[in-house]
Length: 83
Ligand SMILES: [Zn+2]
Image (cartoon, rainbow, N blue to C red; front, side):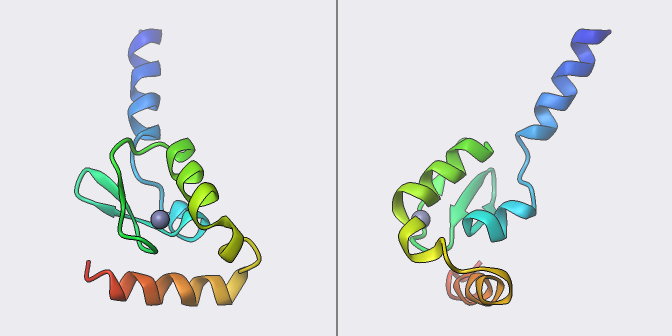
Protein backbone atom coordinates (compact mmCIF):
# COMPACT_ATOMS: atom_id res chain seq x y z
CA UNK A 1 0.00 0.00 0.00
CA UNK A 2 2.74 2.39 0.93
CA UNK A 3 4.62 1.50 -2.23
CA UNK A 4 1.63 2.30 -4.41
CA UNK A 5 1.20 5.65 -2.75
CA UNK A 6 4.83 6.53 -3.26
CA UNK A 7 4.62 5.74 -6.95
CA UNK A 8 1.63 7.99 -7.40
CA UNK A 9 3.42 10.92 -5.86
CA UNK A 10 6.43 10.23 -8.07
CA UNK A 11 4.27 10.26 -11.21
CA UNK A 12 2.70 13.54 -10.28
CA UNK A 13 6.10 15.01 -9.70
CA UNK A 14 7.05 14.13 -13.26
CA UNK A 15 4.21 16.14 -14.71
CA UNK A 16 4.72 19.65 -15.92
CA UNK A 17 4.12 22.23 -13.23
CA UNK A 18 2.65 25.56 -14.27
CA UNK A 19 5.04 27.42 -12.01
CA UNK A 20 7.98 26.20 -14.10
CA UNK A 21 6.84 28.45 -16.94
CA UNK A 22 7.77 31.65 -15.23
CA UNK A 23 10.60 30.16 -13.22
CA UNK A 24 12.45 28.61 -16.13
CA UNK A 25 10.67 29.84 -19.29
CA UNK A 26 9.44 26.37 -20.19
CA UNK A 27 6.12 25.23 -21.57
CA UNK A 28 4.71 21.76 -21.98
CA UNK A 29 5.07 20.34 -25.47
CA UNK A 30 3.57 16.88 -25.76
CA UNK A 31 5.49 14.66 -23.41
CA UNK A 32 8.40 17.07 -23.23
CA UNK A 33 9.18 20.46 -21.80
CA UNK A 34 10.10 23.13 -24.32
CA UNK A 35 12.30 26.12 -23.56
CA UNK A 36 10.59 29.11 -25.16
CA UNK A 37 13.85 31.06 -25.27
CA UNK A 38 15.88 28.69 -27.43
CA UNK A 39 13.22 26.13 -28.50
CA UNK A 40 15.18 23.25 -27.07
CA UNK A 41 13.24 20.43 -25.50
CA UNK A 42 14.04 18.63 -22.30
CA UNK A 43 12.86 15.05 -22.49
CA UNK A 44 12.82 14.34 -18.79
CA UNK A 45 10.25 16.57 -17.20
CA UNK A 46 11.87 17.11 -13.85
CA UNK A 47 12.38 20.45 -12.20
CA UNK A 48 16.09 19.73 -11.82
CA UNK A 49 16.53 19.33 -15.57
CA UNK A 50 14.62 22.49 -16.40
CA UNK A 51 16.44 24.50 -13.79
CA UNK A 52 19.79 23.23 -15.00
CA UNK A 53 18.96 24.21 -18.59
CA UNK A 54 17.81 27.66 -17.60
CA UNK A 55 20.73 28.32 -15.30
CA UNK A 56 23.40 27.10 -17.69
CA UNK A 57 22.02 28.81 -20.82
CA UNK A 58 19.87 31.76 -19.83
CA UNK A 59 20.60 32.69 -16.26
CA UNK A 60 22.76 35.73 -16.98
CA UNK A 61 20.12 37.46 -19.03
CA UNK A 62 17.06 36.48 -17.06
CA UNK A 63 18.11 36.23 -13.45
CA UNK A 64 17.33 39.88 -12.83
CA UNK A 65 14.07 39.79 -14.72
CA UNK A 66 11.32 39.57 -12.16
CA UNK A 67 7.61 39.97 -11.65
CA UNK A 68 5.68 41.67 -14.42
CA UNK A 69 8.67 42.07 -16.72
CA UNK A 70 9.43 38.38 -16.46
CA UNK A 71 5.82 37.45 -17.15
CA UNK A 72 5.65 39.73 -20.19
CA UNK A 73 8.86 38.34 -21.58
CA UNK A 74 7.68 34.82 -21.07
CA UNK A 75 4.42 35.56 -22.90
CA UNK A 76 6.28 37.12 -25.81
CA UNK A 77 8.48 34.07 -26.13
CA UNK A 78 5.51 31.78 -25.80
CA UNK A 79 3.69 33.54 -28.65
CA UNK A 80 6.78 33.47 -30.82
CA UNK A 81 7.36 29.79 -30.24
CA UNK A 82 4.11 29.07 -32.16
CA UNK A 83 2.80 26.61 -29.66
ZN1 LIG B 1 16.71 27.41 -23.46
